[in-house]
Image 1: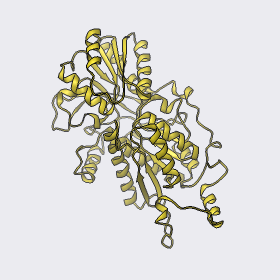
Image 2 (image 1 turned 180 degrees about the vertical axis):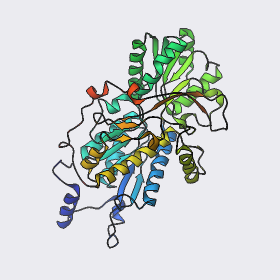
Image 3 (image 1 turned 90 degrees about the vertical axis):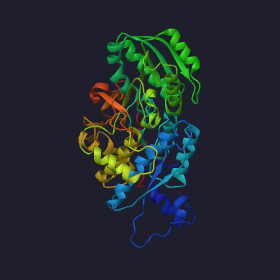
Image 4 (image 1 turned 45 degrees about the vertical axis):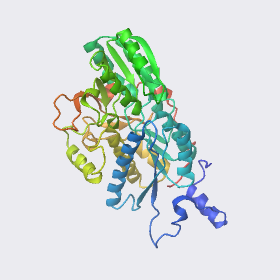
Length: 428
């Protein structure tokens, strides 16, 4: 393990001089660089390729790779080429830990990007903090990721359960009534999203009739749906993700329960609904981006995606791809602002950084919270589009919320970022 007073590059150089250095990973095949060539910047994509979030993992990786390709087309970052390596994190925290260790120790990655399952993201971030490697949690949404599980090296790029609940609960109570049943995926994101949802329901005068826990990997929701029919809530607040959500939506539609009660999905990831029948896309849900936003640069961004990924099943980019792309792009911009790959300098270039709405293709400026490292950004509410212009026009946007109106006020107290001095430092 490195400590804060040891420069990793100097350590490796000293070891090499003593004849004990071991080169592993890609450097085993590229130890001799061309005269004057700069060492590449190694990027580790810690994304799921199997398990509950395999589809979202593939989508966020595509976003990261598009940002890498664009940066390399401009000549790289600080005159250095970006090289990525990928290992499947399998939607399991234990695998996430092993992948992070290998990325850092063997593949010599100076930066890690990727994460949908919040337990996996937390596991990766613990390893990353141990070595001082900057980790961008691109798509997992548990409030704890920028709260009690925050780290100096970790930056959280998606909206979280609190942001989405604040955007939706009050308006839903006013429009549809105040009795709720909660359907909750039985892991960290589900529990933390349910906790913040309950808080919002209580604040605005609603009542939770019951919370039903759904184990990960559930494909038969019959018992839960019968219970909902018996309880007769006005709203079902669901925190169900990935392949579990696809199965849930199909069964709700089969039983004709899509319109009554009202379904409120805390967040809707594009890969989870793309390709489903129209009657499966019921309810109101949150998102951070949509490919039909009438904002500058959106059409050009969609065309870039289509040009780079013409053969993908998902024909247009969604929020998961968007988060992966934006996170990677902002990492590269921070390195350039810092003028170095030194991890502490890059962290400081990220903290408090304001990203203009036009650059991010959202309605309001976004900001990286210096106290929690979460990106505070525009939150959109949407529902199924009753008059789509084409088969990909699935959402009808209902409203957008400013970052200041949906910010998680509890996160700063829960988050205890390590000091700069306690974070190992090195140049990637």
